[in-house]
Length: 311
Image (cartoon, rainbow, N blue to C red; front, top):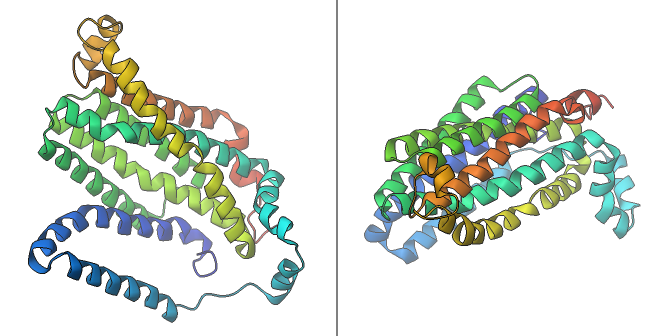
């Protein structure tokens, strides 16, 4: 992206990707339901293949500048071990980028844990009403679409780190309200707000990396970054379910150990423990964003790490 998009538009361009994702989340399920009865599953697969080929074909008409020849020759002189470790070596060279990576690593842990519980929490507290869950998920998709559209028009904060930290903080505030809520309306409003903030987090983060890492090494650095940042995602999802089922749910039953303390906040009975666990994980995510603002190495990353076109 950095080879074809001006630096000041990185956040806008990345937000457009979020528009595509959230649009698909809103319209694809409904479209699939209509097409399934109209043309059948086999023709849906054929249609999917055609749209995939159209998407790939669009790349043929886009001119993407290639790395300069001296950069390519330099890469060819590297051995396989140097190529494999290049991403890690680059990250360790810049503590500010490592600080972002550690922040994302921690945020993804709590984010994946809370996301693993949101659907279960809503179903448990709505009497397994799939219509309520669908409504909340629709509100979430619309919120993400609106947020991404606003960001693509506005362009985001001048200091991208504010977009990252505020995005994480506001998203978790929305999730906390969702966990505390006990009705369809508050769940939908909270889900909309949480999803609205999500594109600000992702687009601002990507804009920072695109402006700091040279285009000819972005592939390896970004692959390393993604691998490390996502390590905690499955861990959060794995621990959330057993923790909610075996500790929080029993503790929040009418005679449970935590019912007397938190029963007035979350209620008691089925789903109260899951809602409490979901809210707790979201509170941890909010705390990370607040802590991030107190750390100069993270808060000032755009000043301490030079842009690739100025280094």
